[in-house]
Length: 179
Image 1 (cartoon, rainbow, N blue to C red):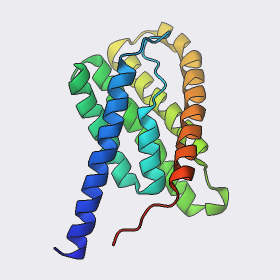
Image 2: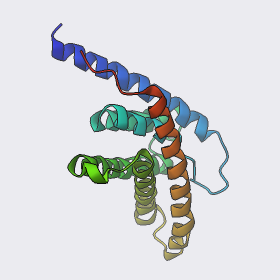
Image 3: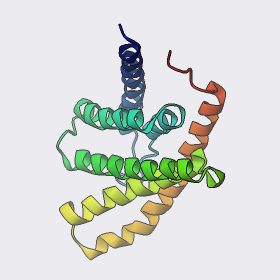
Image 4: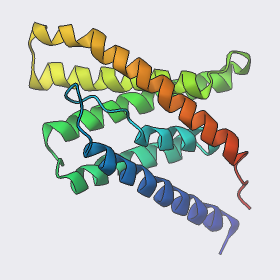
C-alpha cells in the first residue's frame, strides 16, 4: 500500500466512525419531544464541528452528509419535508463553516473560536431550514413571525454545542498526524 492509500484508508475509517457517532446522536435526538416543532439542540452537529476543528472541512462535509442521509433513513423521514429541512440546514451550516474556517485561515489574528463557528453554523442551519420552509412548504408571511424565536433558539443551541465541542477538542488534544 502506498502512503496516499494509507492516508485515504485512515480518513475513510475516521469519517465512518465520526458519521456513525453523529447518526446515533441524530437518531436519539429525534426521539425527544420538542417544545417548538422542528427545534432540536443539534447535538449531532457537535461531531461535525469536532471533525472540522481536528481534521478538515472535507471530512466534516462527509460526516454531515452521511448523518443527514442515513439518519433520515433510520428515523423514517427520508424524502419527507423533515428530510429536506434537515438537508437544507446542513447545507447552510456547512457553507457557514466553510466561510468561517476560510476566514480563520485568511485572518488568523481574528480567528473564530469553536463557539463562534458553532453559532455561525447554527444560525446558518436555521436560515437554510427557514428558507426552504418558506419557499417550498409554507409560503405565507405569517411564517416570518417565527423567525425571531427560531434564531434565538439557534443562537442558544449554537453557544451550547460550541462549548461542548470546544471542551471535547481541548480534552482530545491535537489530532494524530497521518503517517
